Length: 226
Length: 382
Image (cartoon, rainbow over all chains, first blue to last red):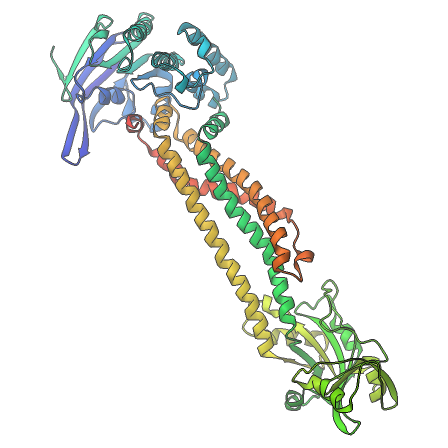
């Protein structure tokens, strides 16, 4: 489903060229729960952003379901992201002036943009289902600054799931959470995986290993054999 | 979330940025409105003040010896009084304040004086303005300073010129010019004294040619007059005309410099605030891009906000600018403010069109910067 072929990503820094990804070749089948492990600076986030059609590699090919992502226009990639990929970030990435339900529905903005009110209605119903499911019912109208870290991350996961994506990319989603909330977040991701979704989770902690069916180690931008 | 909903939520969240942006547009619009409203009064006021320099246009009969006229300010030729009405036609727009006179040098009470009969001032239709010279009632006279001084004349006395009795209503203060040896009376009285019924020797006027961009105003004036009165000559008192023109152009120049300056400063102000707003929204833009929002929607969010800023600023600016102009205008433009300074709703309409456009243009570059953000980079900014 997800295929990276000799993907290189370099950055120009003051000290010279930095290779964040060094000829990464990787295949991830549909419905897998893959853990990307490695120390800070190993290229985990760069790898996720590249898979998410948000960061053009310096060379190599990234394809999902046979589509070469970076052969498409930015607009087409944005559409692809909206329909196929859900994101969860360590820092939650919630819009500060929107409440819980609005933050979740932000992912449905593209439905509204197209004026498909029936679909928009479906998105709203789905948002409320997710709110109920993630125990946020009493926090619907709270803004991010009024939420705990766990609530923020649950809101972020609900937003990631709103469009019923095929893949969830999670970048250190438990990095700012306590043990209980970490377990809860991993359970939600595992449930998505059980329902046939693909999860690619970048982390440097051990907590998620029990949920993953594959672990990929990254070091200095290269995939390491375990 | 709909786009307007997102814009409104963001505005409510970043109130300071929004209010400062609205303030920038308000200042620009208010200054523009107040300058424009006051500008009309300023031009009128300048024109009125410059009128006090006197008539700068002399229309004299065809056979007038130009050298003699320039030396004495008098002509021995006459023309029909009807010329005055003919000249005051709607097709004439380059001069106003038409004053028909009949003037002659006469010997009276042992010395040379100038007898001047003045008709009530005439303005072309639609250009009615307060007269520069107070009309002199029939049977009365204004006596120049030297005459009054030599003959010990006083207001209320009756004088007799060629058998015509005139009551002195005013003895003029010393003017330092020909007015000091002039007796002014109604045109009909002068025509009777000089036995020239229905005749005038000169039409004095004020040209309005300084509104027209030309290097040769006299030619335009002569052409206009010739189309109506082919048998007259036009003499322009150039220094007065030039002074009037330069003064008006100076006032226009001041407005032409200040208004664009204010608009540019406020434009930069809005642009900087928009750039700050983009900087504050790095991560938010990244989130939206990650969620699949395209460039169009991100641009709409920024430009939509700019349009709201522009509309609000235009409305408040119009109210503030009009208030400033109406409140302080009469203090500055004492003669004309009350008659010409009024709220101009057409300016509100223009403001509501141009201020949002202006705000959108100044926010355009920051909006393009926002659109150009690589979402991966934006999401890493905290």
